[in-house]
Length: 60
Image (cartoon, rainbow, N blue to C red; front, side):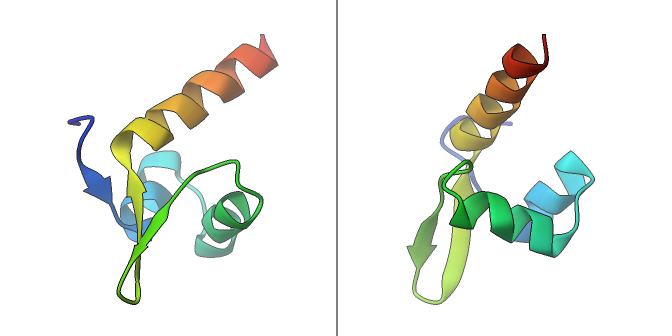
């Protein structure tokens, strides 16, 4: 996964094994940064990587 890649919500759902509403909850709560291009929501791959790292550190 490249750091400059933009992921769809479906991509994030697949990678985290989470449902659509959970991913949108993470976006709404600003725990997972995203951008909107037109009517499409995109999550930078770097933001997903940072989210995973932060969750792992919090769990440790």
